[in-house]
Length: 390
Image (cartoon, rainbow, N blue to C red; front, side):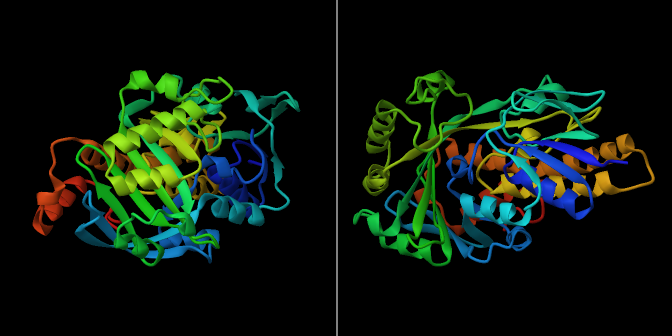
């Protein structure tokens, strides 16, 4: 019988798993290397209605239209969607409000994990043993190295330059369609070899969340991913950590490569994020005494809001499997792993296919009619989950 679970990572996957285990009478201890609401990890998210309801995010903004825009901001295509825009800190805050009483240890990095018995090691507590250890520690997972040592992330050839800017600070040069992004719409600006995603977030400042997907060779990444303290990062540079020279370089590239109104948006944004886009699937999510969930198991390409959704689906199903009786734990986890791989793989492949198509050169989107867009979208949706088009 499982009585005590160690969870490495206190973001969405770790907190949601702790909550689901608590509801089933299983104690969890969560280790998180950062502190606070992890606001540095993200700005905005697009979530499906069931996820919003599960998290209790009453303030999320309903999005009913996805607009494909041309370089001048003209509407090329409209799609009906059912999404909800919300800030990252609201998601974490909602989870934390529900897991009061959980053993959550912030600023507590796990340096190693092991099996037989399942265990974690931290400088703060030394080595502690559990009935099961779960890696919910994201893209740079320590636990994944023990579960799937052959894992390799694939850089897809482009980075996401990201920013948030209050509505009142938006430059005057923006096209009129941007006003709809604070109502019921989101937008993708199609630039032929690059694209920009834009949507408004709820809140007093009504921030506009934007992501510019920029093709860059892998050789540029080491220089771009060195922070203001001279520390090299592999996966991302959160807001507030980019050196002034890197920010200046990205803003200069925006001036060179983006339409004037989008360049003005980048220039008006005080702080930038930087996230290379990777894809990758752990070939196994389970090893003796160890399990992977969320981004530790599958790197979610950020085009379909899949990271949070898949993390919550992983953890709910895992909590059910752990709490079950009858079959042995190893058999239950094996069935859980097979089911999650079947569910996750098509969604992640869809996101990769969409991103690469949006970033590929040679398309003159402005010459496309609705029938052209529909044919393209049908091809992208091939073998995708039923809800992908929404």
